[in-house]
Every structure is written in structure tokens, then in C-alpha cells.
Figure 1 (tube, one colour):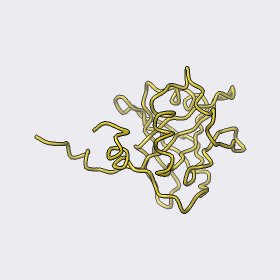
Figure 2 (tube, one colour):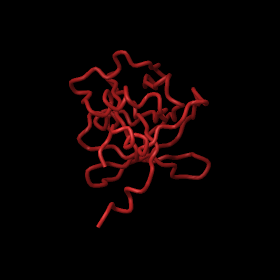
Figure 3 (cartoon, rainbow, N blue to C red):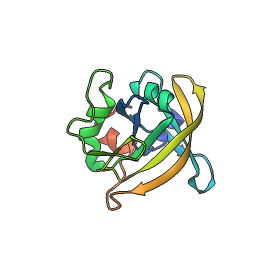
Figure 4 (tube, rainbow, N blue to C red):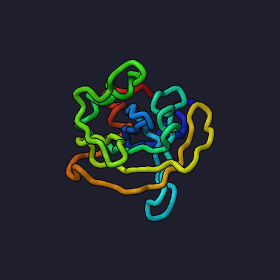
Amino acid sequence: MGKSLLKYKNYDVHAITTVSPLGKINANIATWVMQSAMQGKFITVALYKMDYTIELVRESMILNVNLLAKDQAKKLIAKLGRKSGRTAKKFVNLPFEIDERGCPYLTEAIGYVQCRCVGSIDSGDHELFVCEVLTQKVLNPDKEVLTNDYLRVEGLVRG
């Protein structure tokens, strides 16, 4: 039968960073992020229901979507994608800053989109968060975008 049609899609790789009202911060890896309104006014982010990040996003309804660069792949996939923020301190030795809302963003990313979640919908093992874009900041314009295809070639993800 071969691979499913959706396996042919090449998604950009992001880190979703967030903060709870009590100041707890976390980050995870997400590939299912898309613009969902004209002029980039809204984006939709799919978060895995088992992740700690989704708990914090539900509490605060704020997040940053960090567009990752290829040079971040080996360090961040293991650190943010294979460990839980419930037990691991993901921001140790990770270059980041805190925005005016107290939400972290990754300074070595290509840039980030600062968001306020306006609603969500169930999507099986994920929940889709519709997010109003508050601002977009380009930090490292000369870096190359990290993609899911690159992660496959490098053996950093399955499938």
C-alpha cells in the first residue's frame, strides 16, 4: 500500500512555549501549525493532549510559536520533544528570553509569533487552538527553516 498521502507533506517544525498564571514555563515541539486567517491575523496550533504544554496553555491561553532553524534540530528535538516538562527542566542551557507577558521565546529560533488563544476544538489525540496573532518577531532571518523532512533524513523522527 505504501505511505499515506499525508506523509508526503513537509511541515515546518516549531517550538511552542508557554507560561501558566503561576509562572510555570514549558516548551514542546509541534509541526501542525498553520495560518488560518488573511494577513496572518490568526493561526491554529495542534497540541498533543498528553503533553504538559497543553495544560499550561489551557490555564493561561497564551503561547509563543517559535519557528525553528536547522541548526537547532539535534539539541531541541531531544530536549523539547522527548522529555516531559512535568519532570525535566527544559529551559536549562536553552537560550531564551521572556516577553512582556512572562511567556518565554527561543532567541536562537528564526523568530516567533506571540499569540493569545481565543478558542479550541477537540481533534482526536490533539486539541486545536485558534490563536490571535499579537505580534510577529524575526530574530535570525538568515537561518534555514527546520522541516519534518530534514528530521526524517537525519533520523531524528520516525516515519
